[in-house]
Image (tube, rainbow, N blue to C red):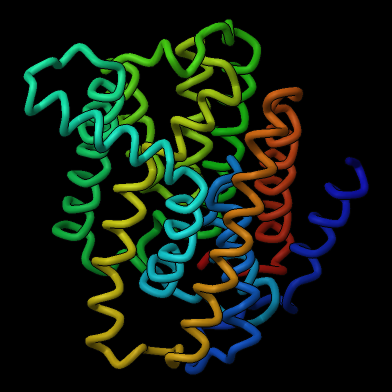
Length: 304
């Protein structure tokens, strides 16, 4: 593990020679695929996909790919999660329809589905507020390297606290409507880059006494509407501008790469959390944030 941390620190600190590359005018297929892989692997791991999708291309000298491209390739992640949890989603949907028609609202499927819907409201409202009041969000201080670093460290400490105090006894069958709403507010925190949607919801789940794998599974299901809406909204704007810095082929390549890597990340994380704690992610996030701060302090990276 120490070698991973040292490698991360070295990579970030050595990036650039006192300045980072501004956003590229064009994005080639290789760059889009790499960013898609980063997006897929980090979307569902509690380490913040937004932070990594921004910082990895910057470290490689490609520049910040921007919010729009990042949101569009999230469609690959949503395709993966729909495929992985298709049976769960179909059961919840059919259960909600049945409960509505028969007026039997005490079924577990109805409570779970309603919890997902209500839990999606906070992040939707937060996203609309950002659109309304921070129109130039791409260049906002909220997306700066220093913010990402400090938020990553803060969320690592909160996840550590949840790991220590969480009872981890409640199973998936014990989920309530309150759990959905509570985790929904935690999910809204992910609008700040560096928080991690998966990380904030997993942390909330541990504080609520959920088993680690249960918290992760519910986090994934809760993310379906939010990630889908984000991707579709940005896709329209992306198409209206003629694909921006990325042409149709790089965009498609990034989405496909995100599909494959997202599925592998979901598959691995759920099985990992059945037998292991989240401490590996705590230490990684601390190292990631510290590496960025060190690069900024030594002038190896600009605070963009």
